[in-house]
Structure formats: structure tokens, C-alpha cells
Length: 245
Length: 248
Image (cartoon, rainbow over all chains, first blue to last red; front, side, top):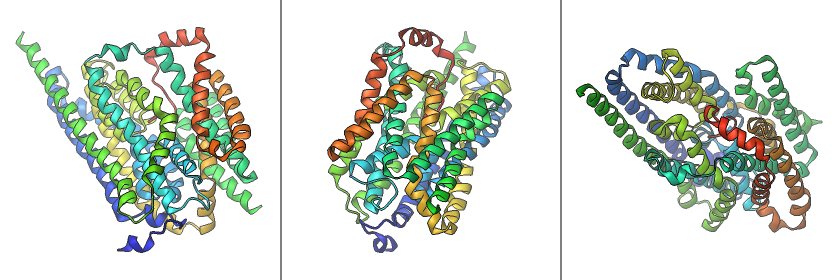
């Protein structure tokens, strides 16, 4: 088999593994599941609508409005996904960054997994085996969100009182702080590696800051949508120029 | 009243269908998403230790464990039960699905939180999913794979080497802005500086769990040192503002 020849624990040619047919099949599986789910949901909505005084046209209009409003955000996600293709391969990027997950959590998860094995995301220690470990960690992490949804949704629907009693102040402070803490320590952890890492982190943070300020000044929400993709691509260009300096 | 029974039955059928098939499809999606790494670990010939995966998972749980549980709790009141199974599989909830639902509701003039609003948001999320799957398939699946094959090797190398600092720089700023809590950001900065420049160099073992140490310390300190007045105020104002920023 094609894959068997390409597999080498210590090879840094991760795309040989990351773009394997089996991973493609899994990615297409996730696509199909979402399509089937959407069809079932649309049919259920069409059936229920007339009974509560909604026309089929109103359901169709809602579908179309949702589709149109998703165009911008979708293409913004596409831009970020393309930047990560050489790191995770197409199937993993489609599933983890395009669909179930998001670029911030998945990249952080991959980096944490690589670190736990004494390796680094990208670079000479990012071997096929480390990619496998990173994908396992990203997938398990993403699975926890889905499992939490599967368990909590029926409980919340029943109006479980114990869940509603969770202190709202804790919900407000702790997750946000944990999130900022995670991205902060992962980001700063890159700085001692080399001056180019400093350029990469600094330029990306700076471009994002500028974009956020502009978005606020001129009140254009689309800038916020595209900010992440623009910051990542631009700072990669700057970093690439720095490597040649 | 027979009419109200009919409405009740119709909505009951809708709830039953969506929660049943929502769960079934989500479980299948979960299966596919776990099948990929399972294959790499057990059948690809790669040498990946189970103990290594458990270590990585423990490190991950220490960092994101709270968020795994809190995010579904946060989105439930906004999305409603049926859309939960859509949203957590399609992803990009705050930047794509919530706006799609809101725009659909205002387009046909129904209010969020009502049953009409719920149906409108389910349809809108289906529409958003259709666009998202199509654009991902065309631009990332087909075009992206081709693009990567023609990108010069030295650029590929730059991307692989420096993707982490580039992503984290932008994501960090986005997280700080969306959280609107400068206090937590300063705490995170101080804690991370100590962990990265003082603790980690002390021993390589420290580096292993440095992320977890930094995250847990930041969360605990942010809670202990919280601005009690503003969190109380925010608590009351919370209902209407959906969370933004890098969330699932």
C-alpha cells in the first residue's frame, strides 16, 4: 500500500501520513453526517412550521438568510485553514479547523500534545509520530466538547436545577481567564526559541491589534471576521522575509 | 382546545425528531472524528504510545477541561436544544452560526426565544452549514490541496516552523479583546512570563506541564483577584450578549 511505504516515525514529511486516504475518508464522513443532519432538520422544520403559523416560504427565507450571512465568515475560515494545510494536512484541517473545532483551540491542543512528548509543532522534531499524537490529542479534545454537548443538552432541557445553580460569576471569570492564560503562555513560550519566532509572534499580535482598533473606529464588523486570517497570512509573509534577512 | 393540542403535537414531533437525530448524527460525527487518529495510532505502522496519548490528553484537560463543560452551558440558552447538536458539530458558533440565526430571525420578523424564532434559527444554521461545507470543500479540499503542491519548499518550511507563534500572536489579542477583562490579561501575562522565563528553564520536566500550570494559576488568580463589582454587574447584563471570540 502507498501509505505503508511512506510511514516513517522519524520522518518530518508529515503530509505523507496526514493526507492518507483513510484520513480523507474520515473527513468526507464528517461532511456527509453534517449534510444528512441538515436535511433531517430542514424537513422537521418544514413539517412543524405550518402548525405554528409559519409558511414554508418563511423557512426557505430563513435558510437563505443564514446561507448568505455565512458567506463572509466561511471564507474567513477558509483563509485560516489554507495557512495550516502544510502543518496538519488537508483532511485534518477540514475536520478540526474547518468544522468541529476552531483554529485557536486546535493549534493550541496540537502544540500542547507535541510539548508533552518533548517535541515542537512544526520544525525538525515535528515527525510523523508527533503529528499522529497531535491529531489524537486534537480529536480527543474536540470529542470532549461533543460529549459534553450530548450529556448536558438533555439535562438542560429537563431544566436540571443543579446546573442552573452553578455560580454565574465563576462562569464569567474562570473560562475567559483560562483561555487568555492558555494562549498567553503558548505564545510567550515561543519567544525564547529564536529572534524569528519573536518576529512571527510580535508581527501577528501587532497586526491583529491594529485591525481590532480599525474595526472599532470605522465600525465594520467584517474586519473582525477577517482579522485572524489577515494577521496570520501577513505575519507569515513578514516572517518569511525575516528568514531571508 | 383542539388547535393548541395540534400545535403542541407538531412541536413535540419536531423536538423529538431533532433531539433524536441530532444525537445520532453527532455520535456518528464523533465516531468519524475519532476514527482518523485511531487509525494512525493502531494501524498505520506509526509508533505512537498509548501512555504518550494519555499524557497529552491530561495536559490538554488541565488547560481546556473547564471550557469543555462551560461552553455548552453558555450556548444552550441562546441556541436551544435542537440547534446544540448542529452547532457543536459544524463549529465556528459565535462568528458564523449565531449571526446567521439572528439575521434570519430579523429577516422574517420573528423574535429569538420564541418557537418561530427557533425554527428560523434551525433553518438558518442549515443554510450556513450548506455554504460552509461547499466553500470548505472547494477552496480547502480541492483548491487548497493543489495550492500546497505548488508552493515552493522554502515557504512551506517557513509556515511549518513559525505557524505556532503566528497563530498565537493574533489569537491572543483576539481573546483579550473579546474577554474585555484587562485584569485577567495582566494576570495571564505576569503568570506566563514567570512560567516561561523562570520555571521552565529550571527543569525540562517543568516544561512538560508548563501550559497547565500557567492556565490553572491564571484562572485561580483571576477568580481570587476578580473585580467583584463589575462581575456582579456583568452577571445581570449577561443575558443578551452572546460570547464572542475564539470559541467553538
